Length: 148
Image (cartoon, rainbow, N blue to C red; front, side, top):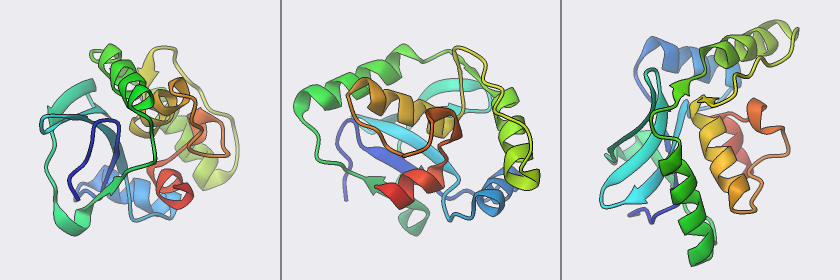
């Protein structure tokens, strides 16, 4: 399936951090991004929010194409583009690991910093769509896959 602007891109990566995320979230998916068109996506990676090339990796990639209006798609893409250059939220990721592994603590979220699934969930919220029953800072790629 070829994605449309505003579609969610989930991926399954080979890296150690990818495996850890999958293990603690009980999901096949460890990363999420937003397709913006012309073979590009926006995603929160270890160096921050970036625009990158979209590559379909077969069984390691899943496109979630929700029923969206043209205006909703535009809002999602525009919000994602506005976040380019913002930092990755390592503090949030670490606090989520403590919650997932030890069931203690609360999310430490740094304003204007993102993890991948938070960026996607926030962009969809700006278009009036809630991707998960969980608060945005707790949403994982697995939650997005399971609930959509």
